[in-house]
Length: 436
Image 1 (cartoon, rainbow, N blue to C red):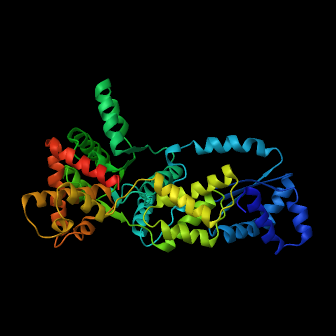
Image 2: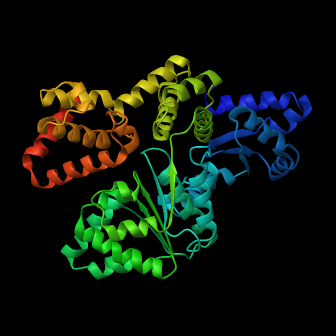
Image 3: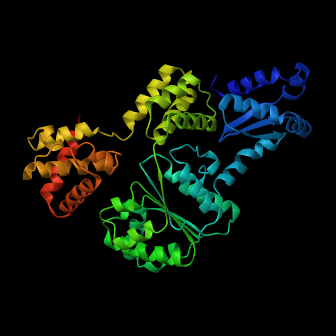
C-alpha cells in the first residue's frame, strides 16, 4: 500500500463509503493519479467537464480522505485532456524560480514546543523585514530546522515581493568567495553583490570565527545592510558568546538583535514531522512504523527525513513492502551512514587512556598539570564532537559550570593555533574515539 496506485485505491475506498457507486463510476472511472508530492495530489481526467465536476463537488471529499491517510492538509490539482503533456515542463520551470529555497516554506515546517519561538520570530521577520528583529539570530544543534526557517523567510519575502534582492550564503562559502575575489581582482564586485541586498541570509556563521580577514569583511557587509534598514538573518550551531574566536564587534552586533534557539523536538513533534515528510513523498506509514522511528531517532530532524527517504527508496527501487523490519533496517542504515556522535563517557574514557589517567581523575578535582590539561582537552572534544551545551558538558565533571567549560575550550583552541603537539594530540584522541 505504498505506490501511487495504492494511495489512489485507498482514497477511492474512502470515497466509496461516502458516494454512490454510480458517482464513483461516472466521475472517477477514467481518473488517474499523476503525482503525490509536497502535500499535493495531482489527478488527470479525460475532459474539462469532468474536471469541473470533480473540483466543485468532490474536492473536499478527496482532501479529507488524504488527511485521513496522511494527517496533514493537501492541495488538489486536476489536469484534463492534453494538459498532462505540459505538466512536467511547467512544473520544472516553476521549481527553478528560486532553487536555493525550493521546498523550504513555513507551511512545511512542523511547529512544536522546541521551536515555536524561533518559528514565530521567523514569521514576524518575513512579514516585516528590517523592522523589529534585525538581525535575527537562530541557533541550535545541527539538523533541527535552522536552515529551513532561514530559507522560509527568503521564500516568503520573494513570493510577496519578487523584485527584492535576496542573498543566501554559508559562512565558509563567504570566506571562499572573498578569497577568490581578492585573487581575481574582483573584490569590489564581491562587496557590491552582498552589501546591496534587501535580505541577507547567512547559514552557519560559526565558520567565520577565527578568520580575521573574513570577519573584517563580514563586519562591513553587516553594517552596510543594517544601516540601510534591510534585514539580516543568521544561523549558527551555538550562541555568539560560545564562539570564542569571534570578534567582539561582531558578537555585540549579533546579540543586538533577536536571538532564538531551536531544541530537539519532543516525541509528538517527531511523529508529526515523520507523517508530514512521508506525505510529501507520497509514502503511507502505519502508526506502528511512525512511532518506532520517532522513538529511535530523537535529536536530529535530518535523520528522521533520511529514514523516510530510505524507506521511499526501498519501495520504489526494491518494490519492498514497508514493514517494521524495513523501518529498523532504514534506521540502522541512516545512523551508520550519518555523522557518528560519540557519548561523553567514550570521550572521557579515550582522553584519560591517552594521558594514562583514570576517568575519575578527569571527572574529579585533581588539579595536577597533566590532569588539568587532559580535562580541558576532553571538554574541547565534547564540544566539538557532540551536540551538548556548555551546561551539559559541565555536568559530566564535578563542580564545573559553563564558565569553566568555556574557559577550558578557549584555552585548547588557542593552543591548537600555535602548538603542533596539541593538534596531534587532539587528532589522535579523536581517531581513537571514532574507532570505538
